[in-house]
Amino acid sequence: MLPLIKQEIVEKKKVLTDEEFIEGLSVAQSLPGAIAINTACFVGRKVRGIAGTLVSVLGASLPSFLIILFIASFFLQYRHLEVVQNFFRGATPAIVALIIGAVVDIGKSALDDWGDLIIAFILFFITLFFNLHPLWIVLIGGMLGVLRRK
Amino acid sequence: MIYLQLFLAFLRVGFFSFGGGMAALPLIEKEVVDTYHWLSNGEFLELVTLSELTPGPIGINSATFTGFKVVGIWGSLVATLAFCLPSIFLVSLIFRSLSYFEENVWVQHFLRGLRPVVIALIGVAAYSLAQKGIKDWFAIMLGIIVFTLVYQKKINPILLLLLSGVAGLIWYGS
Image (tube, rainbow over all chains, first blue to last red):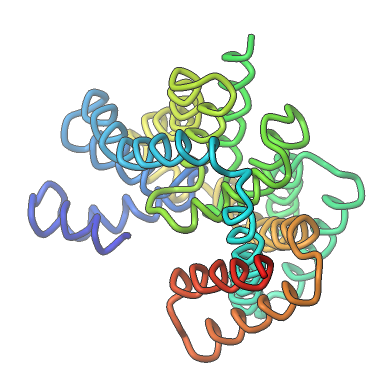
């Protein structure tokens, strides 16, 4: 998806330079929310201020919005059908496999810092055992990051 | 009231979903399944699968889907807007002082501290979805096959997701 954004913004429309795009992207990735939406906010802001931000966000979210609206309007009527249920029963293990793959990938990149891995394990278990709202995990982890490096 | 709940739920999702769509799943699940019961476990699994099969961020997809299911198009609009608001707010807030944001050690240490959080949350997502959706040996086998094909053979995950669904269609249907 990012090469697509870059092609449109830097190469075709030339609204940002390469450097500005990379800076925007690093900010977009570190802020919460969807990266595509954050990037849109940043680019829009750079080009036309707050109005630019709003228009870009509208443009970046509208396709997903319409696609899901379209799918949901049919899906919620037909999801009870046995064929539909069987398809999703088969697809779920694949989703789980993809997510486990993502954990493995990111876990590997954290191998240079054992503290990170240990904290990840602890946060994983306390989320499950205490059924904590994940926003607390985000705050605890961020605070630990500050405390460890102070 | 329901609009306010939708708005606040997806505002929280938008504000705390660091590290991409998969890490956001436990947050979305907490709000839409555990807290408000807007989606059943099965519907949540289906939403995740549909999100994977369609383009676009999972935050937007889940907001649109949940809002629509709960109150219709206006619900979709409110939830999706709520999800985008934190992005609009935060980018506007830091835009004028980008270099301050990038160089402030507190901010950077906080963000650095989120790496284990992202690992933990994606792990929670995997555990929770497995617990809800993998109930027999056929499902376990499918999961292992897909994992191997994606990570050893680098086969397209979307294709495998579809094939896995078709396998379910055949196996559970007969």
